[in-house]
Length: 324
Image 1 (cartoon, rainbow, N blue to C red):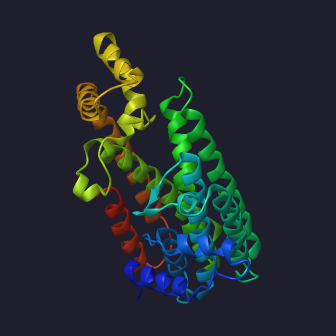
Image 2: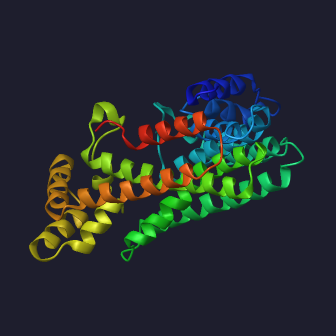
């Protein structure tokens, strides 16, 4: 019997076998660098889990799982260029370690590599897997486009934000589970229920990330608290605050949003106090709970291996109950 931890170890072992560097080496070294940065390998692990729900043999899920991990890391590489990020997982980003042109081209090669791994899927399932991969890839790009547009728009609503995080984050988790289900021989109904589980867990996870950026503990969250507030990032919390605030409270919020010079700690504390007054923290928790419940309800309807369903329930709990 496999656990989620067992599947993660299988993924790591398989990734360690891959040799990305061929000629011209300068195209492929950044790919090897990115893939060697580590991470939780959530997407390929979920792909294997989706397969194991329906089939004892998880070998069919390995190549499509690797394709999803390579694609995920490709999106991070290009996101770092767009965000002008200097560090990823405590290491220099590719465009800082090399240069921007190298990062763009190596990222392009990563996307093609991801498709090459996907095409190694068993022929019985290949069309379904490639169709899902392509649909997911274009949706992730749509989510990134919305994310970039939101930085300059003043009319973003909460529903717009939820659409963006669904596309940018949730659909790839959902597709990972469904891909595994497909190669595991699941029925369309079961594969779709797993997709629904992954999509809703992805939404809950991103909302939790927003929440922890404001209310988390720096030692357990893994990054500085309040970064979204400092950057005026249009999160679930800020958008709800803008919708609910009125009078002097709204004036105070707009003051901090529009301030060009400020003390970061003072701004974080002031905006957090506004959030508390408006109780948008409670709204965020309610929304997380809503998506989590939807996810578990979908998983409960899946006709698959009960031990792996239990593992996925625990995994879901761990994702959205990270320490504050």
